[in-house]
Length: 258
Image (cartoon, rainbow, N blue to C red; front, side, top):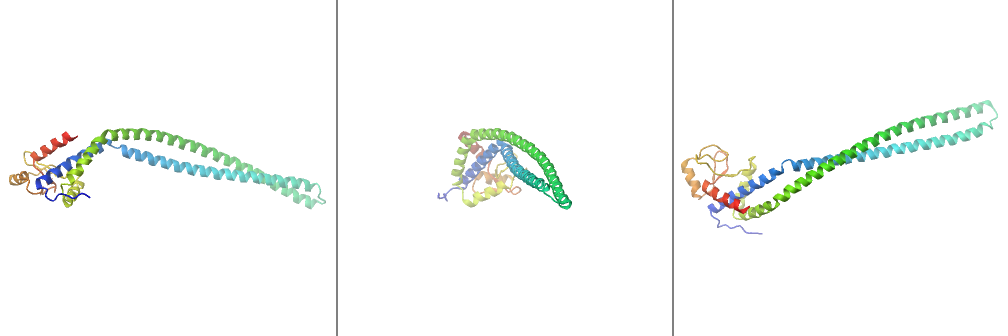
């Protein structure tokens, strides 16, 4: 674990803070270059997951229907077997009552066969519908898979292009953070998180207006900021203030760095 330097001057802390701001802002820019790509990749992955789930349901339904078809076919075989037995028995009957009873059983088994065959036809139609649905889902999956590959390649290219710069910036960020005590780092991060543009450390323009505030800083306070003897915040925005000269010097160093 590294030990932070407690002898760091206020000016050194201000420079380190402003450098952290420059680095974080640059990393924000790099991330913005990615635009909506990460979200598009995530959306495509979620869509493909959803299609897979639908296909699994489709396959399960098809197995269930095929099982029902098998049941109906078995029923037809059983009925035919009974019909064969009844045909044999009816030849051996001795009276009309027994003949009529067997005839009714034959008729019943014949009706059962007809019903089973109709059920099989309906189930086959359902199988065809499930096959069409499965094919459509497969085509949707393949289409999104192609889009996903393209988006991932595009994302990887952009990330690879910026990786070298990000690595340099991240290393320097850690170096600057070592010059700042933890409480000040936390304060910087809190302020930064409270603004959409992520600006926690700002300077003022020639008219004395603080960045992101538009309220003019009094001349006496501008002198104090330029003296770099204490951490000063803009009373309107809560951002930490640095003087324009310091900001320009550090901006030049960062440009040379990357």
